[in-house]
Amino acid sequence: MTRSTNSIITGPASIGHASALDFAQPEPLDMASGKYVKLWQGPQHPGITGNMSLELVLEGDTIVGCKTHVGYLHRGFEKLMERRTFIQNFTVVCRIAVPEPTFNEYLYSHAVEEISGIEIPERAIWLRTMNLELMRLASFLMWIGGMSSAFGQYTVPNWTLAYRDFVLDLFEEMTGARIYHMYIVPGGVRAGLPDGFRKRARDIMDGAEKLLDQVERVMFNNAVFKARSKGLGIITSDMIDPYGIVGPNARACGVSRDLRKDEPYLAYDQLDFEVVTGSDSDAYERAYLRLQETRQCINLIRQCLDHTPTDGPFQADMPNVLHWKVPAGETYVKAECTRGEYGYYMVTDGTEFVRRVHVRGPSYTHAIAVMERLAVGNNIADIAGLMVSLHTYPPEIER
Image 1 (cartoon, rainbow, N blue to C red):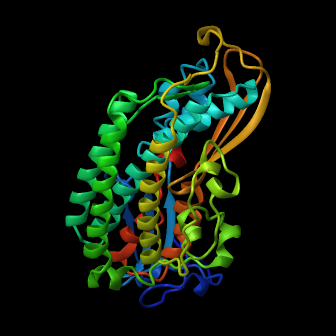
Image 2 (tube, rainbow, N blue to C red):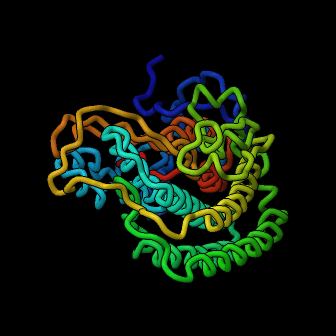
Image 3 (cartoon, rainbow, N blue to C red):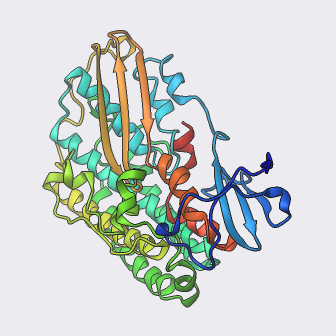
Protein backbone atom coordinates (compact mmCIF):
# COMPACT_ATOMS: atom_id res chain seq x y z
CA MET A 1 0.00 0.00 0.00
CA THR A 2 1.34 3.40 -0.98
CA ARG A 3 1.56 5.94 1.84
CA SER A 4 0.10 9.36 1.35
CA THR A 5 2.63 12.15 1.10
CA ASN A 6 0.57 13.92 3.73
CA SER A 7 1.07 11.21 6.37
CA ILE A 8 3.76 13.09 8.25
CA ILE A 9 2.67 13.42 11.86
CA THR A 10 2.10 10.41 14.00
CA GLY A 11 0.86 9.46 17.44
CA PRO A 12 -1.65 7.26 19.21
CA ALA A 13 -5.02 8.68 20.03
CA SER A 14 -6.35 8.42 23.56
CA ILE A 15 -9.20 9.99 25.42
CA GLY A 16 -8.60 12.61 28.10
CA HIS A 17 -5.25 13.62 29.46
CA ALA A 18 -2.34 11.67 28.01
CA SER A 19 0.34 10.04 30.14
CA ALA A 20 3.95 10.42 29.05
CA LEU A 21 4.36 6.63 29.24
CA ASP A 22 1.52 5.93 26.79
CA PHE A 23 3.73 6.56 23.77
CA ALA A 24 4.89 3.74 21.52
CA GLN A 25 6.27 4.05 17.99
CA PRO A 26 3.04 4.85 16.11
CA GLU A 27 1.99 4.12 12.58
CA PRO A 28 1.91 7.02 10.10
CA LEU A 29 -1.46 8.69 9.90
CA ASP A 30 -3.21 8.47 6.55
CA MET A 31 -4.28 12.05 5.98
CA ALA A 32 -6.13 11.06 2.78
CA SER A 33 -8.55 8.86 4.73
CA GLY A 34 -10.78 11.76 5.74
CA LYS A 35 -10.55 10.65 9.36
CA TYR A 36 -8.15 13.37 10.46
CA VAL A 37 -7.98 17.16 10.25
CA LYS A 38 -4.76 19.14 10.18
CA LEU A 39 -4.73 22.38 12.15
CA TRP A 40 -1.95 24.94 12.51
CA GLN A 41 -1.68 26.82 15.78
CA GLY A 42 0.55 29.86 15.46
CA PRO A 43 2.45 31.91 14.65
CA GLN A 44 -0.07 34.66 15.15
CA HIS A 45 0.68 36.73 18.26
CA PRO A 46 3.63 37.72 20.47
CA GLY A 47 3.33 35.20 23.26
CA ILE A 48 4.40 31.70 24.26
CA THR A 49 1.65 30.08 22.21
CA GLY A 50 2.07 32.31 19.15
CA ASN A 51 5.79 32.85 18.57
CA MET A 52 6.14 29.34 17.19
CA SER A 53 3.85 27.04 15.27
CA LEU A 54 2.32 23.67 16.11
CA GLU A 55 1.26 21.47 13.21
CA LEU A 56 -1.52 19.46 14.82
CA VAL A 57 -3.46 16.48 13.52
CA LEU A 58 -6.87 16.00 15.12
CA GLU A 59 -9.30 13.13 15.35
CA GLY A 60 -12.38 14.94 16.51
CA ASP A 61 -11.04 17.29 19.16
CA THR A 62 -8.28 14.91 20.28
CA ILE A 63 -4.69 15.56 19.19
CA VAL A 64 -3.23 12.47 17.52
CA GLY A 65 -0.13 14.10 16.05
CA CYS A 66 2.04 17.13 16.75
CA LYS A 67 5.05 18.66 15.05
CA THR A 68 6.63 21.93 16.14
CA HIS A 69 7.94 24.56 13.75
CA VAL A 70 10.31 27.30 14.85
CA GLY A 71 12.33 29.92 13.00
CA TYR A 72 9.84 32.76 12.81
CA LEU A 73 11.86 34.86 15.28
CA HIS A 74 15.38 34.12 14.08
CA ARG A 75 17.41 37.33 14.30
CA GLY A 76 20.95 36.01 13.91
CA PHE A 77 22.19 37.27 17.28
CA GLU A 78 25.04 34.76 17.56
CA LYS A 79 26.42 35.83 14.17
CA LEU A 80 25.92 39.52 14.93
CA MET A 81 28.09 39.14 18.04
CA GLU A 82 31.05 38.07 15.89
CA ARG A 83 30.97 41.46 14.16
CA ARG A 84 30.86 43.65 17.24
CA THR A 85 33.37 44.46 19.96
CA PHE A 86 32.95 42.85 23.36
CA ILE A 87 31.31 45.91 24.88
CA GLN A 88 29.04 46.55 21.87
CA ASN A 89 27.46 43.13 22.29
CA PHE A 90 25.54 44.33 25.33
CA THR A 91 22.96 45.89 23.06
CA VAL A 92 22.54 42.45 21.51
CA VAL A 93 22.60 39.81 24.27
CA CYS A 94 19.85 41.31 26.42
CA ARG A 95 17.40 41.04 23.51
CA ILE A 96 17.73 37.28 23.08
CA ALA A 97 15.06 36.44 25.69
CA VAL A 98 12.88 39.47 26.36
CA PRO A 99 11.25 38.30 29.63
CA GLU A 100 14.68 37.49 31.16
CA PRO A 101 17.39 39.68 29.60
CA THR A 102 19.46 39.73 32.79
CA PHE A 103 20.60 36.12 32.47
CA ASN A 104 22.06 36.86 29.04
CA GLU A 105 23.90 39.88 30.43
CA TYR A 106 25.28 37.85 33.31
CA LEU A 107 26.39 34.81 31.31
CA TYR A 108 27.99 36.87 28.56
CA SER A 109 29.89 38.92 31.16
CA HIS A 110 30.86 35.85 33.16
CA ALA A 111 32.21 34.10 30.05
CA VAL A 112 34.34 37.13 29.13
CA GLU A 113 35.57 37.42 32.73
CA GLU A 114 36.47 33.75 32.93
CA ILE A 115 38.51 33.83 29.74
CA SER A 116 40.17 37.12 30.75
CA GLY A 117 40.86 36.08 34.36
CA ILE A 118 38.89 39.00 35.81
CA GLU A 119 37.75 38.81 39.46
CA ILE A 120 34.74 40.97 40.27
CA PRO A 121 34.37 42.80 43.63
CA GLU A 122 32.26 41.41 46.49
CA ARG A 123 29.73 44.21 46.18
CA ALA A 124 29.23 43.40 42.49
CA ILE A 125 28.68 39.72 43.34
CA TRP A 126 25.77 40.59 45.63
CA LEU A 127 24.30 43.17 43.25
CA ARG A 128 24.36 40.63 40.42
CA THR A 129 22.67 38.03 42.59
CA MET A 130 19.93 40.46 43.58
CA ASN A 131 19.48 41.47 39.95
CA LEU A 132 19.07 37.87 38.83
CA GLU A 133 16.51 37.10 41.55
CA LEU A 134 14.53 40.24 40.74
CA MET A 135 14.50 39.04 37.15
CA ARG A 136 13.27 35.60 38.20
CA LEU A 137 10.50 37.25 40.24
CA ALA A 138 9.35 39.43 37.32
CA SER A 139 9.42 36.46 34.96
CA PHE A 140 7.46 34.20 37.31
CA LEU A 141 4.80 36.87 37.87
CA MET A 142 4.29 37.15 34.11
CA TRP A 143 4.23 33.36 33.73
CA ILE A 144 1.62 32.86 36.48
CA GLY A 145 -0.66 35.29 34.67
CA GLY A 146 -0.12 33.49 31.38
CA MET A 147 -0.83 30.09 32.91
CA SER A 148 -4.05 31.30 34.48
CA SER A 149 -5.32 32.97 31.31
CA ALA A 150 -4.52 29.86 29.24
CA PHE A 151 -7.33 28.15 31.17
CA GLY A 152 -9.76 31.06 30.95
CA GLN A 153 -9.03 32.81 34.27
CA TYR A 154 -8.42 36.49 33.61
CA THR A 155 -8.44 37.96 37.11
CA VAL A 156 -5.05 36.51 38.09
CA PRO A 157 -3.10 37.91 35.08
CA ASN A 158 -4.51 41.37 35.82
CA TRP A 159 -3.08 41.04 39.34
CA THR A 160 0.30 39.52 38.51
CA LEU A 161 1.10 41.63 35.44
CA ALA A 162 0.15 44.78 37.31
CA TYR A 163 2.40 43.83 40.23
CA ARG A 164 5.21 42.91 37.86
CA ASP A 165 5.27 46.60 36.96
CA PHE A 166 6.36 47.39 40.53
CA VAL A 167 9.31 45.01 40.08
CA LEU A 168 10.12 46.75 36.80
CA ASP A 169 10.06 50.04 38.74
CA LEU A 170 12.83 48.60 40.92
CA PHE A 171 14.82 47.70 37.82
CA GLU A 172 14.38 51.24 36.54
CA GLU A 173 15.72 52.62 39.81
CA MET A 174 18.59 50.16 39.94
CA THR A 175 19.65 50.12 36.29
CA GLY A 176 17.97 53.02 34.52
CA ALA A 177 15.81 50.76 32.35
CA ARG A 178 12.72 48.61 32.86
CA ILE A 179 13.33 45.78 30.36
CA TYR A 180 16.75 45.88 28.67
CA HIS A 181 18.90 46.82 31.64
CA MET A 182 22.47 46.45 30.34
CA TYR A 183 23.46 46.64 34.01
CA ILE A 184 25.73 43.61 34.39
CA VAL A 185 28.93 44.32 32.47
CA PRO A 186 32.33 42.61 32.33
CA GLY A 187 34.08 43.38 35.59
CA GLY A 188 30.97 43.96 37.70
CA VAL A 189 27.90 46.19 37.39
CA ARG A 190 27.31 49.77 36.26
CA ALA A 191 26.17 51.26 39.58
CA GLY A 192 25.30 50.63 43.19
CA LEU A 193 21.86 50.93 44.80
CA PRO A 194 20.18 54.36 44.82
CA ASP A 195 19.18 56.00 48.10
CA GLY A 196 16.04 54.51 49.59
CA PHE A 197 16.08 51.49 47.27
CA ARG A 198 16.28 48.88 50.02
CA LYS A 199 13.17 50.13 51.83
CA ARG A 200 11.16 50.42 48.62
CA ALA A 201 12.27 46.93 47.55
CA ARG A 202 11.29 45.44 50.93
CA ASP A 203 7.86 47.07 50.71
CA ILE A 204 7.33 45.64 47.23
CA MET A 205 8.42 42.18 48.43
CA ASP A 206 5.87 42.38 51.26
CA GLY A 207 3.16 43.24 48.75
CA ALA A 208 4.22 40.46 46.39
CA GLU A 209 3.98 37.94 49.21
CA LYS A 210 0.41 38.97 49.98
CA LEU A 211 -0.44 38.86 46.27
CA LEU A 212 0.79 35.27 45.96
CA ASP A 213 -1.46 34.23 48.84
CA GLN A 214 -4.42 35.63 46.88
CA VAL A 215 -3.24 33.92 43.70
CA GLU A 216 -3.07 30.57 45.47
CA ARG A 217 -6.63 30.92 46.75
CA VAL A 218 -8.15 32.11 43.48
CA MET A 219 -6.16 30.10 40.93
CA PHE A 220 -5.07 26.86 42.56
CA ASN A 221 -8.30 26.23 44.45
CA ASN A 222 -10.40 26.84 41.34
CA ALA A 223 -12.30 23.69 40.32
CA VAL A 224 -12.01 24.40 36.58
CA PHE A 225 -8.26 25.02 36.76
CA LYS A 226 -7.78 21.81 38.72
CA ALA A 227 -9.93 19.74 36.37
CA ARG A 228 -8.13 20.96 33.26
CA SER A 229 -4.54 21.02 34.53
CA LYS A 230 -4.31 17.92 36.73
CA GLY A 231 -3.13 14.96 34.68
CA LEU A 232 -2.26 17.21 31.71
CA GLY A 233 1.18 16.70 30.15
CA ILE A 234 2.71 14.36 32.70
CA ILE A 235 6.52 14.28 32.78
CA THR A 236 7.96 11.21 34.47
CA SER A 237 11.43 10.86 35.98
CA ASP A 238 12.54 8.45 33.22
CA MET A 239 12.07 11.26 30.67
CA ILE A 240 14.37 13.75 32.40
CA ASP A 241 17.78 12.76 31.04
CA PRO A 242 16.77 11.43 27.58
CA TYR A 243 14.89 14.65 26.85
CA GLY A 244 17.24 17.03 28.66
CA ILE A 245 14.46 18.33 30.87
CA VAL A 246 15.64 20.88 33.45
CA GLY A 247 14.38 23.49 35.88
CA PRO A 248 10.88 23.42 37.38
CA ASN A 249 9.71 20.94 34.74
CA ALA A 250 12.17 18.41 36.18
CA ARG A 251 11.87 19.44 39.83
CA ALA A 252 8.08 19.06 39.70
CA CYS A 253 8.47 15.28 39.36
CA GLY A 254 10.86 15.05 42.31
CA VAL A 255 14.24 15.56 40.62
CA SER A 256 16.23 17.84 42.94
CA ARG A 257 18.44 19.70 40.48
CA ASP A 258 19.16 23.42 40.73
CA LEU A 259 22.44 25.00 39.63
CA ARG A 260 22.19 27.54 42.43
CA LYS A 261 22.62 24.62 44.87
CA ASP A 262 24.44 21.99 42.81
CA GLU A 263 27.09 24.30 41.34
CA PRO A 264 26.75 27.59 43.26
CA TYR A 265 27.75 30.81 41.53
CA LEU A 266 27.79 34.45 42.63
CA ALA A 267 26.49 34.64 46.25
CA TYR A 268 24.17 31.64 46.20
CA ASP A 269 26.42 29.59 48.47
CA GLN A 270 25.84 32.28 51.13
CA LEU A 271 22.05 32.29 50.83
CA ASP A 272 19.71 30.15 52.91
CA PHE A 273 17.28 28.21 50.72
CA GLU A 274 16.31 24.68 49.74
CA VAL A 275 15.50 23.28 46.32
CA VAL A 276 11.72 23.13 45.80
CA THR A 277 10.49 19.82 44.39
CA GLY A 278 7.16 18.17 43.62
CA SER A 279 6.00 14.62 43.07
CA ASP A 280 3.89 14.50 39.90
CA SER A 281 4.95 16.76 37.05
CA ASP A 282 1.64 17.50 35.37
CA ALA A 283 0.55 21.01 34.42
CA TYR A 284 -0.96 21.65 37.85
CA GLU A 285 2.12 20.49 39.76
CA ARG A 286 4.45 22.50 37.54
CA ALA A 287 2.33 25.59 38.13
CA TYR A 288 2.18 25.10 41.89
CA LEU A 289 5.94 24.50 42.08
CA ARG A 290 6.55 27.77 40.22
CA LEU A 291 4.31 29.54 42.70
CA GLN A 292 6.54 28.21 45.49
CA GLU A 293 9.67 29.27 43.61
CA THR A 294 8.20 32.75 43.24
CA ARG A 295 7.88 32.89 47.01
CA GLN A 296 11.47 31.66 47.22
CA CYS A 297 12.59 34.56 45.00
CA ILE A 298 11.07 37.00 47.47
CA ASN A 299 12.97 35.39 50.33
CA LEU A 300 16.27 35.45 48.41
CA ILE A 301 15.81 39.09 47.42
CA ARG A 302 15.29 39.99 51.08
CA GLN A 303 18.49 38.17 51.98
CA CYS A 304 20.35 40.04 49.24
CA LEU A 305 19.01 43.35 50.53
CA ASP A 306 20.31 42.48 53.99
CA HIS A 307 23.78 41.34 52.88
CA THR A 308 24.71 43.55 49.92
CA PRO A 309 27.54 45.90 51.00
CA THR A 310 26.67 49.58 51.08
CA ASP A 311 30.10 50.72 49.94
CA GLY A 312 33.17 49.44 48.16
CA PRO A 313 33.87 49.06 44.43
CA PHE A 314 31.23 47.57 42.17
CA GLN A 315 33.53 47.36 39.13
CA ALA A 316 36.94 45.73 38.73
CA ASP A 317 39.81 47.58 37.08
CA MET A 318 39.21 47.17 33.36
CA PRO A 319 41.17 47.94 30.19
CA ASN A 320 39.88 50.44 27.65
CA VAL A 321 36.79 48.58 26.45
CA LEU A 322 36.87 50.39 23.10
CA HIS A 323 40.15 48.62 22.25
CA TRP A 324 39.84 45.54 24.42
CA LYS A 325 41.43 42.37 23.12
CA VAL A 326 40.29 39.36 25.13
CA PRO A 327 42.88 36.54 25.30
CA ALA A 328 42.34 33.47 23.16
CA GLY A 329 40.35 30.78 24.97
CA GLU A 330 37.02 29.06 25.34
CA THR A 331 34.55 28.44 28.15
CA TYR A 332 31.03 27.29 28.95
CA VAL A 333 29.16 29.07 31.73
CA LYS A 334 25.65 28.47 33.03
CA ALA A 335 23.03 29.75 35.46
CA GLU A 336 19.60 28.73 36.73
CA CYS A 337 16.92 30.85 35.06
CA THR A 338 13.19 30.37 35.67
CA ARG A 339 13.10 27.57 33.08
CA GLY A 340 16.28 25.74 34.11
CA GLU A 341 19.90 25.69 32.95
CA TYR A 342 20.78 28.60 30.66
CA GLY A 343 24.23 28.36 29.11
CA TYR A 344 26.75 30.32 27.03
CA TYR A 345 29.61 28.73 25.10
CA MET A 346 32.21 31.31 24.05
CA VAL A 347 35.37 31.07 21.97
CA THR A 348 37.83 33.97 21.63
CA ASP A 349 40.92 34.34 19.44
CA GLY A 350 42.83 37.24 21.01
CA THR A 351 41.23 39.96 18.87
CA GLU A 352 38.73 42.71 19.64
CA PHE A 353 35.88 40.46 18.52
CA VAL A 354 34.41 37.25 19.88
CA ARG A 355 35.17 34.27 17.64
CA ARG A 356 32.01 32.29 18.45
CA VAL A 357 29.13 32.44 20.92
CA HIS A 358 26.47 29.78 21.25
CA VAL A 359 23.46 30.36 23.49
CA ARG A 360 21.64 27.32 24.84
CA GLY A 361 18.35 27.93 26.62
CA PRO A 362 16.13 25.23 28.15
CA SER A 363 13.26 26.05 25.78
CA TYR A 364 15.07 24.27 22.95
CA THR A 365 14.14 20.84 24.30
CA HIS A 366 11.03 21.75 26.26
CA ALA A 367 9.27 23.46 23.35
CA ILE A 368 10.20 20.95 20.65
CA ALA A 369 10.87 17.34 21.67
CA VAL A 370 8.96 17.43 24.98
CA MET A 371 6.04 19.38 23.56
CA GLU A 372 5.64 17.00 20.61
CA ARG A 373 5.53 14.04 22.96
CA LEU A 374 3.17 15.44 25.58
CA ALA A 375 0.64 16.96 23.15
CA VAL A 376 -0.59 13.68 21.71
CA GLY A 377 -3.76 12.34 23.31
CA ASN A 378 -4.88 15.66 24.76
CA ASN A 379 -7.83 17.86 23.84
CA ILE A 380 -7.20 20.75 21.46
CA ALA A 381 -8.65 23.13 24.07
CA ASP A 382 -5.80 22.30 26.45
CA ILE A 383 -2.88 22.76 24.05
CA ALA A 384 -2.22 26.39 25.05
CA GLY A 385 -2.23 25.47 28.73
CA LEU A 386 0.19 22.62 28.06
CA MET A 387 2.59 24.92 26.18
CA VAL A 388 2.53 27.52 28.93
CA SER A 389 2.99 24.86 31.63
CA LEU A 390 6.37 23.98 30.08
CA HIS A 391 7.39 27.67 30.34
CA THR A 392 8.93 27.88 26.90
CA TYR A 393 10.36 31.05 25.34
CA PRO A 394 10.50 30.68 21.55
CA PRO A 395 12.85 33.71 21.18
CA GLU A 396 15.64 31.88 23.04
CA ILE A 397 15.28 28.98 20.58
CA GLU A 398 15.66 31.31 17.61
CA ARG A 399 18.45 33.55 18.88
